[in-house]
Amino acid sequence: MQTPAPFEYERATSVDGAIASLREHEDSRIVAGGHSLLPMMKLRLASPSRLIDINDLDELAYIREEGDEIAIGALTRHRALLESEAARACAEHATPALVKQLREIRKEIEDAFDKSDFKRVLTYTERFYEAMFTGGHKLMMHQVVKSLNARINQLRSVTIASPGRGTDSNREMNKLLSAIAKKDGDAAAAASLEHVRRTAGIVMAVLAERTAEASV
Image 1 (cartoon, rainbow, N blue to C red):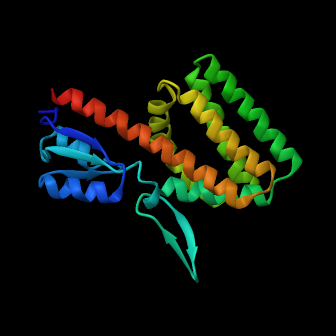
Image 2: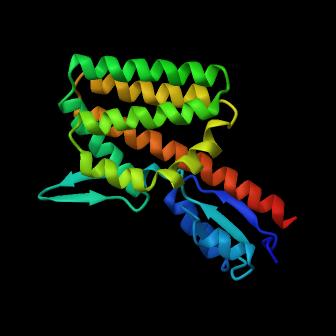
């Protein structure tokens, strides 16, 4: 059996709302990444009546200083940690040559989106991040991200073909590039976090929809 049992899907809009839904539906499950839960549902090793998607809860996705400590929200992903730190460092070390390189890569990505050439979008997106990590002198972090690239590109392939994603992605990435050009590390990190969060939200919505369709 490779299809899940029927279930309801809810996209939480607040932490209180998610908690209330959990209390109302005793056999519901929270989903944020879903890498373990969704495969178990397909094998019917888990059969929740409702999935509560919490990816839109911005208050759980943060990286901030609290006194002498760094607080990391429950929805902050490993990729977000690495890329936001690289974005901050890239902004702090930005040179005119680096900014020019990133702008040229962004033009290629925008052109690829316009032509629905999603393979080229993926290729130049990788080049953008490679330049960003290198420009921020975060080579070790880049090696970690490269080890995740197969999974990351699989998720990107899900999102880039989504309706309107080209426009939204270009806006998010240009916001990141603008912060780097202004040497504003905090704004660059925030823009990077926002981009990863939005991407993750789209992926989860698409995967949940596919899983729901398979259960019918």
